[in-house]
Image 1 (spheres, rainbow, N blue to C red):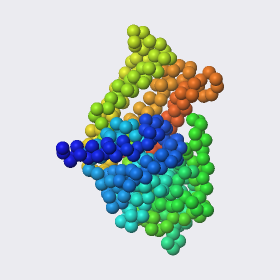
Image 2: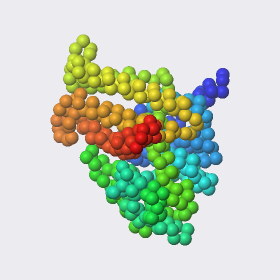
Image 3: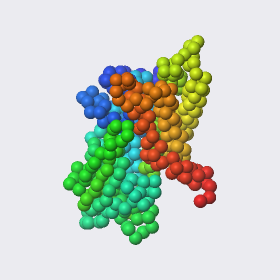
Length: 399
């Protein structure tokens, strides 16, 4: 038996023994993730996986990660998929600030923050967008003034996902108001549990409140939590966005098992929905237009999955493909939005249910998912921003 075969056998046995049934075969929207991870089973699952470093299997062992090479990471991913196991931890710590600290953080910063991300001790949120600085992120006005060993921060952030549950924030702040707007920005980390931080959830049309307004009034960030140097935050901030967009765009799933039949499952799911609400004839969806829509969408999703898998395998360890992440963010966001819209369309009038006796819980859930899917083409950078990046940084087109 080869070393990889042995690793697979040991991994399968470990997961079978340690993954609670309640953490298997569950589906939830990211907006509701905190509910699924606030249980005894979820905490136990996190504890045993963190002990092996498998909450962050690619990260170096000196920071609490698993230190697994690409082949072993692929096996771990495949075995977790076989069990339909939920990841032991999720969030911006693992997907965004962790990889950024690995690239830009000092050794002291890595030792202080990364192990707490691995073991789930600290939850993170993102302080980027402001009321007057969303798509034009470099227009931020939140000010940070040096005061001895601290920064004193005043301003407002908006669309801070999960701020009401977060312990720490990574934020872009203006530290030189007289410099060009891209040059006077710094990247800092700050504790959310302090008197100068006020959080107000924003109610969305989908009925949930994952986004917040965050007000910073003489909030404090320590100088030791400045990442990348004073007034050098734009470079750090852009890199973090590439990590974010690679996750939203689907590059994080590049190690999935070849044997899984996701496309077939997707076609069957959509076809079953259409048969129920539109009707069937000879075992097929009775409407030609619906059949064509299902097939076209499923083919696009499969092409996207294969492309993401290929690019992930081509990438060197722990790196993301730079500006090309915008391609995956753009295409992946549109596919997610279109998938939710197609489900609602196939259901006809039942796909517009919000409440009342005439609608089943599943129908209302699909409607809410369709409404919340509108945001996926906005957060992480709008479609328009992604197209600008692609034209300039990928295709090299003139300004």
